[in-house]
Length: 313
Image (cartoon, rainbow, N blue to C red; front, side, top):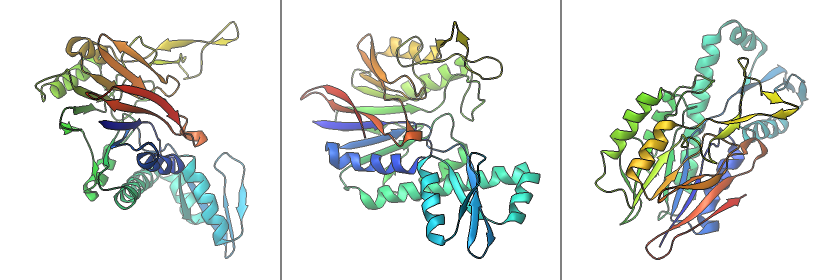
C-alpha cells in the first residue's frame, strides 16, 4: 500500500512548512506533497535605529525591540505568518520607498532564499524512503523555480511524469484560469486547456493516474469563493456575503474526458472538501496558513485498499 499526505497553499508560513515535514512520520506516509502557492505575500523590514534598538511595523503599529534575541523572536513570528522579515537601516528603508524596483528585487531574493532553506530542511530532516513532491502555484514567481535545482531530494513535478509507485503516475499543472489578482501563472481558459492536454499526452493510461492541478474544477464544492466587486471587496446582499464558483472550466472538461483516478487541487482556501466527477475523486484541503494551521488529506492508494480522510495540525 502507498500512503500520500497532500497539502497546498502554504504561502510562506514557516510553521506550516515545519508541520508538513512532520507528517511523513506522524501519518506513516510514503509520499509527502505540498503543491501550489509556496511563497508569501509581504516583506517586513526590521529597522535598526541604534546599537540596541530596532523597530518594525507590519500592520502600521510600531513595535520596538531591544536585543538580538527579541529581533530573532520577531523574525520567527513574522515568518510563521507567511511574511519575509529582513534587517535593514533607516537609509535603506527610504531608498526602498523611493524605488519600487528595488523592493521587487528584494522580494524575489527573499522568496527564493526562503524556499531554498525549506528544501534543505526536507533534505536533512526526512526519512530517505519518503518521496517529497513540491510544486509552485499561480501566485509563485518564476524566479523561485531555480531553488529546486539546489535539492536532490525534493521532486518538482512540473512538465514531467512522476512515478508515485509501481502503479500510479502523477502529472501536474500549476497554472490557473484568470483571477482578479493578475498572478504570475494565470492564463485564459483556452491556454489552460492546451497546457492540460499537453500533460495528459505524456501518459498512456488514466485509470491509475493522479493529477496535481492547482486550479479546482468549475462548479464543485472545491471552487466556492467570495464574489468581489471592481475594487476587490466582498459583495454583500441583505447583509450576507455572496459566494460564487471560480474554478476552471478547462480543468473540469479534461477530468470529465479522461477520468483520471484522482485529482488534487488547491487555490481556493475556503473550499476544502471532496467531490466525485464521474469516477474521479477530486479533493482540496483548503488553507489556513495565516493561523499556522496545516490542512491536508491522507490517501491510501489501491489496490490493497482505497481510503482518504482530511486532517489538521
